[in-house]
Image (cartoon, rainbow, N blue to C red; front, side, top):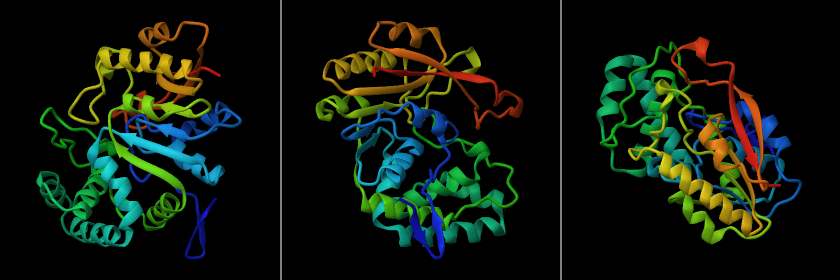
Length: 286
């Protein structure tokens, strides 16, 4: 289902750039989806590339999406429920940014708005203007990424925001802020659960696990692997993306799991030469 906005048909796509985003891998992920499934669950929502693909291609799919990052979850519900107010706020950010990008960026980065609209427009504004579009917070939960080198960033992508709002309103999508393990209570036989967690580092310098101020640790990965086994025994279809690391492969070495290696680029590596030639694992039980 394509969304009509003005005279242009716009397919909804992620409204934030997120570490490990899956837009470029959609063709491969699509090939690996089961032919049929019940409810679609995605407990590490991030930018939601696969969610928007499923909502567009399989109109009417029931989806249950969640993330532990409360600001991100708030952004999804704000876009769904209060799109016009949000766009108005983003246009205001754009106007002030164009006057003095550096001082305005750092004043917004240091701000701590209370209202739903201002919190979400701050997140989108910072994501559009910060270095490499990287969402990262420090141990105190403060966004700490410097200003990016953009001449004309697309701060108000109005067509896409309307398209995302329309598809979230028109489809049967529930949005929650919760830990990934909560999916076990809800998912039933035949449902599809897609996990795209912060990846296990494959080198000392590749340790990026801080979308929230709680790092995703090796213990969390172990919890996730255990959860996948429980979902498998319930008859759920499970699809998991992660880094091409020995720890991950070892956790899914039993015969229930098919592990394949796929090529992926890293769009947010600060060194553009290191953005290509990466592999990651795609793991499924069907």
